[in-house]
Length: 488
Image (tube, rainbow, N blue to C red; front, side):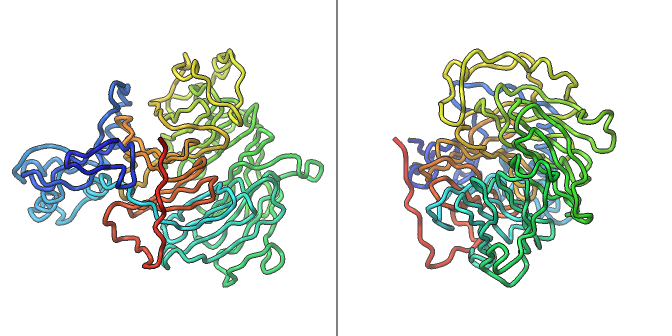
């Protein structure tokens, strides 16, 4: 059990085993508030992260240097809210207000670790859970054919309950269009279905109460020969990119209503794809062949040839998340690690990825071999590696924390051990571990503006975590507080 410096039992606050240290001073005199620090795990040294990503993270989430010159007191980080406010009143920035970095410095220390409160509870495994880009909607997809869209601004009321059409195995992924008018969903089928989210119909039954148009990603002679694991809208809403079980990446032109590109991208399932940035020119992909690849649509030198390859994972890739700058992204791997990548360090050689496993293992039903936990790829080109969570049984997802409120200072992930882990990007520290669920947490999502995080699990629970005392995302008076369940 971890106890704060002020004597607060963290188990009782809903974030047992947290690496939070409640030592940031509200006043220089010693009163404390609940904040996150970047303490490293005892007995383990985190290799120094790339200087550039460290500097970029600090620029986005660090206070202005002039603050220490104008406001007296101890020069330590994080700067207390009182000193930040005093600096703003002194106009240290020269703008009369907080900069975006100042805002992130204030908000990024307040992690969503209190709770959880119940959003929904079903008898079906939850596979997908995501906030919309503006945080007004939340989407959860379940194995039992249901996809629910909740209106966050209206007390998490179900705005639309979608009964998926032609579902095979489960809802594997969903994606909202940038204007939040349409949602696409996928399963183990080459047909992606699109639904009008903005219609007035709450109960959306495929081709009964509403049309769920099917977008066929296959040619007629290959129909239903593969499934789709991952799908994303482009930032302009004109295209979809998808990763499939036939080792391919697909790009679908929504305006022309036809498949525009197929890339034979990998030698195994493509579990995850995403656009690198707003331009839509770069695509990242991750596969069970252990490789992450970068595809530049502007300059295909040869058909199915990537712009570069990133080697370092010892097992398959389950998910990718881009930092949005066309340079950095993270990957979750079945080797029980998250890796941070810089695409400027990519290689054209894939031969160095072969032949490093000397044991038989299948993540779908076996624990990760103890002898493999400390192995490192001899050609690992990643910037940093984060360990502590568990990637087993399903394609568990990881993300950068929001840019607006945290400056992408953290990485967070679901885990097979039923928890949510939050890591500091620069130090590698586990700054929080959220415990409630009793089955794997496949997906989780951090609100783009507020310290609210929602986790969904195979136990059927969709729950939200908040910063203690947070009043930004209102909780209904009759909302039932979830009884927290702990492990020995």
